[in-house]
Length: 149
Image 1: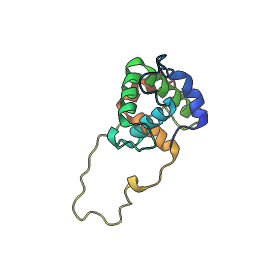
Image 2 (image 1 turned 180 degrees about the vertical axis):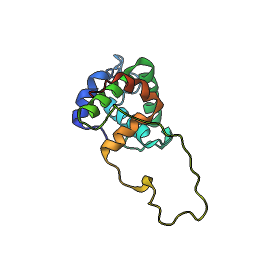
Image 3 (image 1 turned 90 degrees about the vertical axis):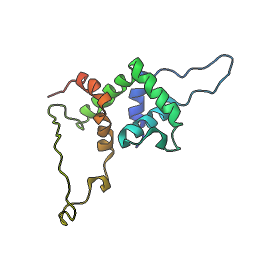
Image 4 (image 1 turned 120 degrees about the horizontal axis):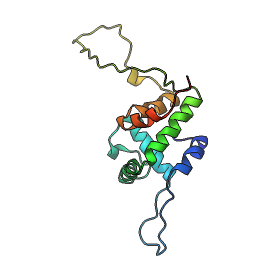
């Protein structure tokens, strides 16, 4: 699920303007919206960078821009804006949370009546967007977003 036009309108001012060389040498920069959609796809799915689908810019471009945005603080501002948008729409509740580190191994020939894996179930775009916030790089940005409760 790529960014909607409303989400892009909020995020576009946070991104640096593409570089344009006066001598017209080198490749022109890819559209920042496409690059951001590629980065968010990687963070949502947890796939390796080289598995980025062809509809996005090359994985090298997305990864290089991701690293540059992380170093410059642009990525933190993007995550804060996305978290604030989700909070304002009631899709993200920062008033409570938990971490569960329990582990349970499955035995061979386990219970036959167990529900199917959650990985196979269809998920909403809100859930997929919220999954971006599970990345450790997003925690500092989430701490700066104030809960309204």
